[in-house]
Image 1 (cartoon, helix red, strand yellow):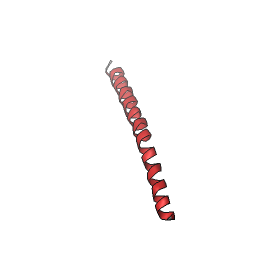
Image 2 (cartoon, helix red, strand yellow):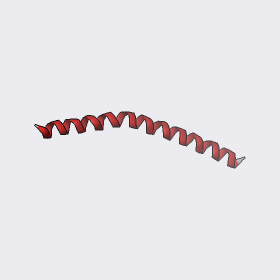
Image 3 (tube, helix red, strand yellow):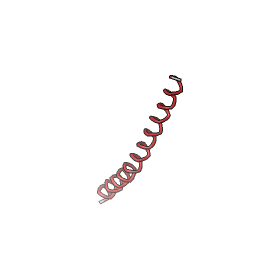
Image 4 (cartoon, one colour):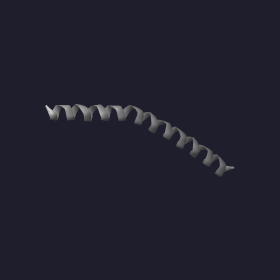
Length: 45
């Protein structure tokens, strides 16, 4: 019973962490790409 409970809680933690990673990637990737494009535009001028 204890092992099953730990396994269930571990799976829940992995699901939550995965959701946060996806959310973070959705927010960070556009910011990073926009920053890179801005730096390239500034460097090319």
